[in-house]
Length: 186
Image (cartoon, rainbow, N blue to C red; front, top):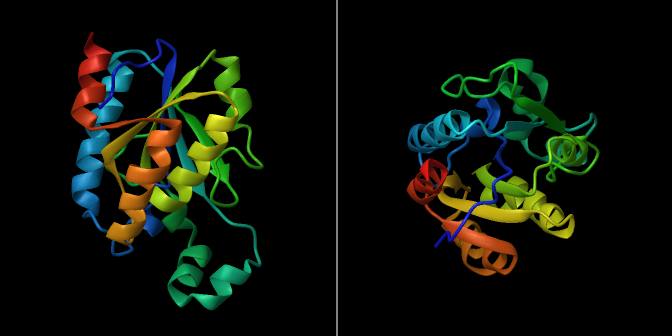
């Protein structure tokens, strides 16, 4: 359950890019993108910042060499683009991360601090990788965290549920997209 959002909250969307959404995910990409699209609209209507984070690992990357599907993603620049269902506007913050954590090796913290952001609503893929990696750093940096349970997915139910039920409640509040949208309307 989500009890409140900071007045200076940003929506941070993790790895909602063509290459990752092509993988077989626990929640179909179309459902995920529909929910995230509603969150995106609510944040924009409230005049709050939106951050699109995509991953583009440096080359060569040993993990990519082991996995032929990941190797294909790594070589096609179109697959690094944000899913077309989510319109990126000029005022949105764009962050390209080299690995799992959107704060490591990027200007994300500085961009949020410059705007006076104290809270982050997280959604995206994969719950146990990009979302959790980013969340752990955000918590250490002092951000108030909100996790959108139905706005994220993973490759396995076990990984997804572990993050949502064990890790995230220790560092923030977990709830549904509808709860966030209602709080933004208040």
